[in-house]
Length: 252
Ligand code: SF4
Image (cartoon, rainbow, N blue to C red; front, side, top):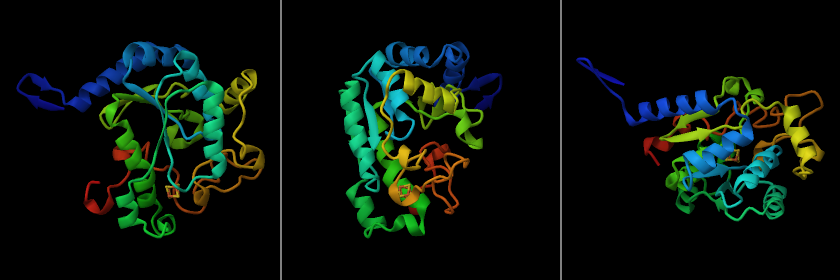
């Protein structure tokens, strides 16, 4: 925000922040389905996508969106390091919910050739690996949208404890309709609507990402404890300010 005499000039990002705060105030208490209906039908019609990992909790948000408009674009980032079960679950669940526009996006071949030619980057630099395999493909996929929907929830981690329903993310509005849902709410909704679980949940994976960076979780452990276990990392970068670091300062 720049101050000049008595005139306040708002940047694009400032304006978006005001817009997001206004939506959050006006619509944040209306419940997940109504927030989604307002976002998909009214605020961002034709300009909004759901981003889904088709992970352990994903069926609930996918089902809610399918109830409003099954033609809503769904962006799925296929990092090239996922469990086969996740991709089969993506296909099965999309069919079952009647989703017509699931877009699987991949890392750029040139990024892999330059930065991860042997596929071992996750061992030496997991931030850079997430950047080329998750963050950049998602940024490219979201280029045509002015808003996106995320399934994050406040209970998932300390960094998400004050998550708003509407926020700004890299020049777009990000909608978090499940922000105030507890783990038990997700389970109950999935039961009530007979939604199939990700097959790896029954094998001890309550939170599922890439195969090399996802471990089983013991009973009583934090559900996300298996993500990057012992690797000094808790987020992939998609939800961090500036979407994590830039590689080699090159800005790609
Ligand atoms: Fe790479 Fe692991 Fe990130 Fe997947 S989760 S992109 S394998 S560092």
